[in-house]
Length: 103
View 1 (spheres, helix red, strand yellow):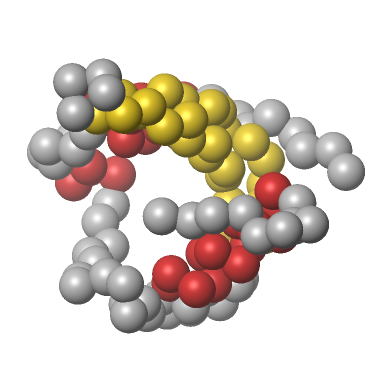
View 2 (cartoon, helix red, strand yellow):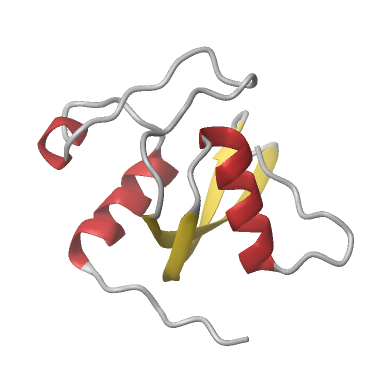
C-alpha cells in the first residue's frame, strides 16, 4: 500500500509507487474517483484515490512486496471475487472518462 512522502504531491506519489510496485513508468491520464473502503466490519476506513494511467514501459515486474501477479483482460474481471471498492473502481473505469488533473 502506497504512502505519500514529505513534500511529495499526489501525481509524483502515484508515479513513484507504481514504479516501485510494478517497475512500470506511467503517465497519469486523470483522476478516476475517490472511494470509501471499509474493512473489519467498518472498524477500518480507507479513502482510496484512483487514477487512470497509461503504461509507458513494458512488461511489469513483481515487486519484493508481492508474492505474485497476473494480467487479465476485461472479460476475465467479471469472474473475480474482488472487494466492493475494487468492483466500484473497475465499473467506473469501464464506463467513464477520467477527470482532468490540474497542477
